[in-house]
Image (cartoon, rainbow, N blue to C red; front, side, top):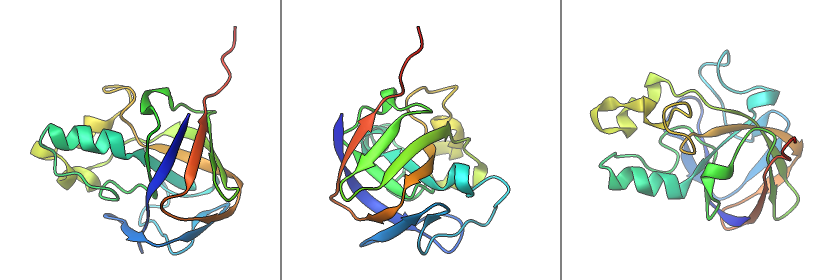
Length: 159
């Protein structure tokens, strides 16, 4: 399944993360990006957070004031069927970066302003499957920029 990077976002800590024209991806995340709460965010298993522009647009249609970067994702992706994204799946980006989904994120109250009625649990995987952000580990580091092609390979299923 193929899509594109819509936005690359970083912050000095917290949300929203703001768009940048490019970033270097390393084992610990994107250059220029930091987290206020390193107990729950960041580190090698949560190096890069991804979310779907298509899900963001559906949420806007429900009346939520969400926007790319407002819920803390580093990469906003378009054109990938987000319901197929799961731990073990891999995102392979034009230019060589490879990220592997390590887990679904657990939304916290710091993103509440992106939701009508402050309902930040609207993107909780258990309650709304296929509409969660995901954390990834870095398999292959390198540069990344908006407009880059990305291929998603779902995890192999076990019989």
